Image (spheres, rainbow, N blue to C red):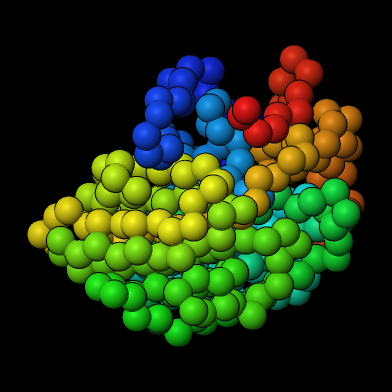
Length: 322
Ligand code: MN
Protein backbone atom coordinates (compact mmCIF):
# COMPACT_ATOMS: atom_id res chain seq x y z
CA UNK A 1 0.00 0.00 0.00
CA UNK A 2 1.05 3.56 -0.56
CA UNK A 3 -0.38 6.81 0.63
CA UNK A 4 -1.26 10.03 -1.12
CA UNK A 5 -1.11 11.89 2.17
CA UNK A 6 2.34 13.38 2.41
CA UNK A 7 1.63 14.60 5.91
CA UNK A 8 -0.59 11.78 7.13
CA UNK A 9 -2.09 13.76 9.97
CA UNK A 10 -5.05 16.02 9.39
CA UNK A 11 -4.81 19.52 10.79
CA UNK A 12 -7.93 19.12 12.89
CA UNK A 13 -8.93 16.51 15.38
CA UNK A 14 -10.61 16.07 18.69
CA UNK A 15 -8.74 15.82 21.95
CA UNK A 16 -8.58 12.38 23.45
CA UNK A 17 -11.12 11.64 26.11
CA UNK A 18 -9.13 11.82 29.32
CA UNK A 19 -12.03 11.26 31.67
CA UNK A 20 -11.69 8.70 34.41
CA UNK A 21 -13.23 5.27 33.99
CA UNK A 22 -12.61 2.94 31.08
CA UNK A 23 -9.58 4.33 29.34
CA UNK A 24 -10.81 3.55 25.87
CA UNK A 25 -10.30 6.38 23.43
CA UNK A 26 -12.33 6.24 20.21
CA UNK A 27 -10.32 7.12 17.11
CA UNK A 28 -12.61 7.81 14.14
CA UNK A 29 -11.62 6.94 10.58
CA UNK A 30 -11.09 9.42 7.78
CA UNK A 31 -11.49 8.60 4.10
CA UNK A 32 -8.25 8.79 2.14
CA UNK A 33 -8.12 8.27 -1.64
CA UNK A 34 -5.01 6.30 -2.57
CA UNK A 35 -4.85 7.85 -6.05
CA UNK A 36 -3.30 6.09 -9.01
CA UNK A 37 -5.08 4.60 -12.03
CA UNK A 38 -7.92 3.29 -9.86
CA UNK A 39 -9.27 5.63 -7.23
CA UNK A 40 -9.46 3.27 -4.27
CA UNK A 41 -10.40 4.90 -0.98
CA UNK A 42 -9.37 3.61 2.43
CA UNK A 43 -10.51 4.42 5.97
CA UNK A 44 -7.47 5.53 7.98
CA UNK A 45 -7.49 5.46 11.78
CA UNK A 46 -3.77 5.72 12.47
CA UNK A 47 -1.85 7.96 12.61
CA UNK A 48 -3.91 10.91 13.72
CA UNK A 49 -3.26 14.10 15.57
CA UNK A 50 -4.10 12.65 18.96
CA UNK A 51 -2.21 9.41 18.45
CA UNK A 52 0.82 8.54 16.33
CA UNK A 53 1.43 4.95 17.38
CA UNK A 54 -0.07 1.98 19.23
CA UNK A 55 2.96 -0.05 20.25
CA UNK A 56 5.09 0.07 17.10
CA UNK A 57 1.96 -0.01 14.91
CA UNK A 58 1.97 3.33 13.12
CA UNK A 59 -0.50 3.02 10.26
CA UNK A 60 -3.96 1.44 10.06
CA UNK A 61 -5.80 1.45 6.72
CA UNK A 62 -9.12 -0.38 6.42
CA UNK A 63 -10.89 -0.89 3.10
CA UNK A 64 -13.99 -2.52 1.67
CA UNK A 65 -16.03 -4.55 1.28
CA UNK A 66 -15.69 -3.05 -2.22
CA UNK A 67 -17.25 -4.61 -5.30
CA UNK A 68 -14.28 -4.39 -7.65
CA UNK A 69 -16.65 -4.25 -10.66
CA UNK A 70 -17.54 -0.80 -9.34
CA UNK A 71 -14.39 0.31 -7.52
CA UNK A 72 -11.84 -1.08 -9.97
CA UNK A 73 -10.06 -2.85 -7.14
CA UNK A 74 -6.49 -2.20 -6.04
CA UNK A 75 -3.66 -1.21 -8.37
CA UNK A 76 -0.76 0.32 -6.50
CA UNK A 77 2.28 0.78 -8.74
CA UNK A 78 5.83 0.15 -7.47
CA UNK A 79 6.67 2.48 -4.60
CA UNK A 80 9.35 2.53 -1.90
CA UNK A 81 9.38 1.98 1.86
CA UNK A 82 12.06 2.53 4.49
CA UNK A 83 12.17 2.08 8.26
CA UNK A 84 8.97 0.04 8.48
CA UNK A 85 7.18 -3.26 7.90
CA UNK A 86 3.88 -3.62 6.07
CA UNK A 87 1.39 -6.23 7.27
CA UNK A 88 -1.34 -7.16 4.78
CA UNK A 89 -4.43 -8.97 6.05
CA UNK A 90 -7.49 -9.67 3.91
CA UNK A 91 -11.05 -10.64 4.79
CA UNK A 92 -12.01 -11.13 1.14
CA UNK A 93 -10.33 -10.95 -2.26
CA UNK A 94 -6.81 -11.60 -3.44
CA UNK A 95 -3.84 -9.28 -4.02
CA UNK A 96 -0.74 -9.97 -6.09
CA UNK A 97 2.40 -8.70 -4.36
CA UNK A 98 5.72 -8.14 -6.14
CA UNK A 99 8.76 -6.63 -4.47
CA UNK A 100 12.42 -5.77 -5.01
CA UNK A 101 13.47 -8.73 -2.88
CA UNK A 102 12.18 -10.77 -5.83
CA UNK A 103 9.13 -12.06 -3.97
CA UNK A 104 5.99 -12.69 -6.01
CA UNK A 105 3.22 -13.68 -3.62
CA UNK A 106 -0.55 -13.82 -3.45
CA UNK A 107 -2.14 -12.21 -0.40
CA UNK A 108 -5.24 -14.18 0.57
CA UNK A 109 -7.81 -13.96 3.37
CA UNK A 110 -6.57 -15.22 6.71
CA UNK A 111 -2.92 -15.20 5.59
CA UNK A 112 -0.37 -12.76 6.98
CA UNK A 113 2.07 -11.23 4.54
CA UNK A 114 4.66 -9.19 6.43
CA UNK A 115 7.15 -7.23 4.35
CA UNK A 116 10.17 -5.68 6.04
CA UNK A 117 11.38 -2.58 4.27
CA UNK A 118 14.46 -2.11 6.42
CA UNK A 119 16.86 0.29 4.70
CA UNK A 120 14.83 0.21 1.51
CA UNK A 121 12.40 -1.94 -0.49
CA UNK A 122 9.88 -1.31 -3.24
CA UNK A 123 6.73 -3.22 -4.09
CA UNK A 124 3.51 -3.25 -6.09
CA UNK A 125 0.07 -4.49 -5.01
CA UNK A 126 -2.66 -5.38 -7.50
CA UNK A 127 -5.96 -7.15 -6.83
CA UNK A 128 -6.26 -10.23 -9.05
CA UNK A 129 -8.93 -10.81 -11.73
CA UNK A 130 -10.39 -13.53 -9.47
CA UNK A 131 -11.30 -10.87 -6.90
CA UNK A 132 -14.94 -9.84 -6.73
CA UNK A 133 -15.05 -8.28 -3.26
CA UNK A 134 -11.93 -6.60 -1.85
CA UNK A 135 -11.93 -6.21 1.91
CA UNK A 136 -9.07 -6.00 4.37
CA UNK A 137 -6.53 -3.97 6.25
CA UNK A 138 -3.01 -2.80 5.77
CA UNK A 139 -0.99 -2.07 8.87
CA UNK A 140 2.49 -0.59 9.18
CA UNK A 141 5.00 -1.26 11.94
CA UNK A 142 7.75 1.25 12.79
CA UNK A 143 11.14 -0.42 13.11
CA UNK A 144 13.15 0.46 16.23
CA UNK A 145 16.45 2.34 15.92
CA UNK A 146 18.54 -0.81 16.29
CA UNK A 147 16.85 -2.58 13.37
CA UNK A 148 15.49 0.11 11.11
CA UNK A 149 18.19 -0.38 8.49
CA UNK A 150 17.86 -4.17 8.53
CA UNK A 151 17.77 -6.31 5.38
CA UNK A 152 14.65 -6.56 3.26
CA UNK A 153 12.49 -9.51 4.26
CA UNK A 154 9.13 -11.12 3.55
CA UNK A 155 7.27 -13.51 5.87
CA UNK A 156 4.12 -15.48 5.22
CA UNK A 157 2.04 -17.14 7.94
CA UNK A 158 -1.38 -18.79 7.99
CA UNK A 159 -2.61 -18.92 11.60
CA UNK A 160 -4.99 -21.65 12.63
CA UNK A 161 -8.22 -20.31 14.07
CA UNK A 162 -8.21 -20.53 17.88
CA UNK A 163 -11.59 -20.95 19.58
CA UNK A 164 -12.62 -18.23 22.01
CA UNK A 165 -15.45 -18.49 24.50
CA UNK A 166 -17.86 -17.26 21.85
CA UNK A 167 -15.88 -16.71 18.72
CA UNK A 168 -12.51 -17.23 17.10
CA UNK A 169 -9.07 -15.64 16.98
CA UNK A 170 -6.47 -15.77 14.24
CA UNK A 171 -3.18 -14.65 15.78
CA UNK A 172 -0.93 -13.41 13.00
CA UNK A 173 1.70 -11.71 15.21
CA UNK A 174 2.52 -12.22 18.88
CA UNK A 175 0.53 -14.22 21.43
CA UNK A 176 -3.17 -14.30 22.30
CA UNK A 177 -5.67 -16.91 23.48
CA UNK A 178 -2.97 -19.55 23.85
CA UNK A 179 -1.63 -19.20 20.32
CA UNK A 180 1.70 -17.67 19.30
CA UNK A 181 2.66 -16.61 15.80
CA UNK A 182 6.04 -17.97 14.68
CA UNK A 183 6.77 -14.76 12.75
CA UNK A 184 9.57 -12.82 14.49
CA UNK A 185 9.14 -9.11 15.23
CA UNK A 186 11.63 -6.36 16.07
CA UNK A 187 9.59 -5.12 19.03
CA UNK A 188 6.95 -7.10 20.95
CA UNK A 189 3.73 -6.94 18.93
CA UNK A 190 0.25 -8.37 18.88
CA UNK A 191 -1.86 -8.69 15.74
CA UNK A 192 -5.00 -10.84 15.55
CA UNK A 193 -8.32 -11.10 13.76
CA UNK A 194 -11.20 -11.76 16.16
CA UNK A 195 -14.76 -12.81 15.48
CA UNK A 196 -17.57 -12.82 18.03
CA UNK A 197 -21.00 -14.36 17.75
CA UNK A 198 -24.09 -12.13 18.14
CA UNK A 199 -24.54 -10.80 21.70
CA UNK A 200 -21.43 -12.69 22.82
CA UNK A 201 -18.84 -11.52 25.31
CA UNK A 202 -15.27 -12.72 25.59
CA UNK A 203 -12.53 -11.77 28.03
CA UNK A 204 -8.97 -12.13 26.79
CA UNK A 205 -5.83 -12.19 28.91
CA UNK A 206 -3.55 -9.44 27.62
CA UNK A 207 -0.06 -8.23 28.45
CA UNK A 208 -0.32 -5.28 30.87
CA UNK A 209 2.84 -3.80 29.35
CA UNK A 210 1.01 -3.44 26.03
CA UNK A 211 -1.25 -0.70 24.78
CA UNK A 212 -3.98 -2.04 22.49
CA UNK A 213 -6.01 -0.93 19.51
CA UNK A 214 -9.23 -2.58 18.35
CA UNK A 215 -10.37 -1.89 14.80
CA UNK A 216 -13.98 -2.91 14.25
CA UNK A 217 -14.57 -4.27 10.77
CA UNK A 218 -18.22 -5.18 11.19
CA UNK A 219 -20.65 -5.15 14.08
CA UNK A 220 -20.97 -2.90 17.11
CA UNK A 221 -18.49 -3.92 19.76
CA UNK A 222 -17.91 -2.81 23.33
CA UNK A 223 -14.20 -2.63 24.15
CA UNK A 224 -13.76 -2.55 27.93
CA UNK A 225 -17.24 -1.00 28.10
CA UNK A 226 -16.87 1.61 25.36
CA UNK A 227 -18.99 1.15 22.23
CA UNK A 228 -17.14 1.11 18.91
CA UNK A 229 -18.87 1.32 15.54
CA UNK A 230 -17.56 -0.24 12.32
CA UNK A 231 -14.35 1.43 11.07
CA UNK A 232 -13.59 2.96 14.48
CA UNK A 233 -10.37 2.18 16.32
CA UNK A 234 -10.55 1.91 20.10
CA UNK A 235 -7.39 2.61 22.10
CA UNK A 236 -6.70 1.11 25.53
CA UNK A 237 -3.67 2.32 27.51
CA UNK A 238 -1.19 -0.10 29.13
CA UNK A 239 -2.06 -1.55 32.52
CA UNK A 240 -4.92 -3.93 31.77
CA UNK A 241 -4.41 -7.66 32.34
CA UNK A 242 -7.68 -8.56 30.62
CA UNK A 243 -9.67 -7.11 27.77
CA UNK A 244 -13.41 -7.73 27.59
CA UNK A 245 -15.14 -7.47 24.23
CA UNK A 246 -18.90 -7.67 23.66
CA UNK A 247 -20.70 -7.94 20.34
CA UNK A 248 -23.84 -5.92 21.04
CA UNK A 249 -25.50 -6.72 17.72
CA UNK A 250 -27.63 -9.45 16.10
CA UNK A 251 -24.97 -10.34 13.51
CA UNK A 252 -21.43 -11.70 13.87
CA UNK A 253 -18.77 -9.10 14.63
CA UNK A 254 -15.25 -9.03 13.23
CA UNK A 255 -12.31 -7.02 14.58
CA UNK A 256 -8.55 -6.66 14.31
CA UNK A 257 -6.72 -6.34 17.63
CA UNK A 258 -3.25 -4.77 17.63
CA UNK A 259 -0.91 -4.05 20.50
CA UNK A 260 2.60 -3.62 21.81
CA UNK A 261 4.56 -1.83 24.48
CA UNK A 262 4.61 1.95 23.91
CA UNK A 263 7.15 2.86 21.23
CA UNK A 264 9.24 5.54 22.86
CA UNK A 265 11.20 6.79 19.86
CA UNK A 266 10.08 9.85 17.96
CA UNK A 267 9.60 9.24 14.25
CA UNK A 268 9.16 11.24 11.09
CA UNK A 269 6.50 9.75 8.77
CA UNK A 270 6.29 11.18 5.29
CA UNK A 271 4.74 9.47 2.27
CA UNK A 272 5.94 5.86 2.47
CA UNK A 273 9.00 6.55 4.57
CA UNK A 274 9.76 6.45 8.28
CA UNK A 275 12.91 8.15 9.53
CA UNK A 276 14.15 10.06 12.53
CA UNK A 277 14.82 13.41 10.86
CA UNK A 278 13.66 15.48 7.91
CA UNK A 279 17.09 15.06 6.35
CA UNK A 280 16.70 11.28 6.28
CA UNK A 281 13.34 11.61 4.56
CA UNK A 282 14.76 13.96 1.93
CA UNK A 283 17.59 11.47 1.32
CA UNK A 284 15.09 8.60 0.91
CA UNK A 285 13.01 10.67 -1.54
CA UNK A 286 16.11 11.58 -3.56
CA UNK A 287 17.21 7.94 -3.63
CA UNK A 288 13.80 6.86 -4.97
CA UNK A 289 13.74 9.61 -7.57
CA UNK A 290 17.19 8.69 -8.88
CA UNK A 291 16.41 4.95 -8.86
CA UNK A 292 18.84 3.76 -6.18
CA UNK A 293 18.51 2.04 -2.78
CA UNK A 294 15.02 0.55 -3.20
CA UNK A 295 15.76 -2.01 -5.92
CA UNK A 296 13.53 -2.95 -8.82
CA UNK A 297 10.08 -4.55 -8.96
CA UNK A 298 9.82 -6.96 -11.89
CA UNK A 299 6.59 -7.99 -13.55
CA UNK A 300 4.41 -4.96 -12.80
CA UNK A 301 2.65 -3.67 -15.90
CA UNK A 302 3.13 0.08 -15.75
CA UNK A 303 5.22 2.91 -14.40
CA UNK A 304 6.37 3.24 -10.81
CA UNK A 305 4.91 5.91 -8.52
CA UNK A 306 6.77 9.21 -8.44
CA UNK A 307 7.44 10.72 -5.03
CA UNK A 308 5.25 13.69 -4.16
CA UNK A 309 6.77 17.12 -3.64
CA UNK A 310 8.20 17.80 -0.22
CA UNK A 311 6.30 20.30 1.91
CA UNK A 312 7.60 23.82 2.35
CA UNK A 313 7.72 23.41 6.09
CA UNK A 314 10.30 21.24 7.87
CA UNK A 315 9.31 17.63 8.63
CA UNK A 316 9.16 17.24 12.38
CA UNK A 317 9.49 14.10 14.50
CA UNK A 318 6.34 12.95 16.26
CA UNK A 319 6.04 10.65 19.22
CA UNK A 320 3.63 9.31 21.74
CA UNK A 321 0.88 11.51 23.10
CA UNK A 322 1.56 11.97 26.79
MN1 MN B 1 3.36 -0.16 0.19
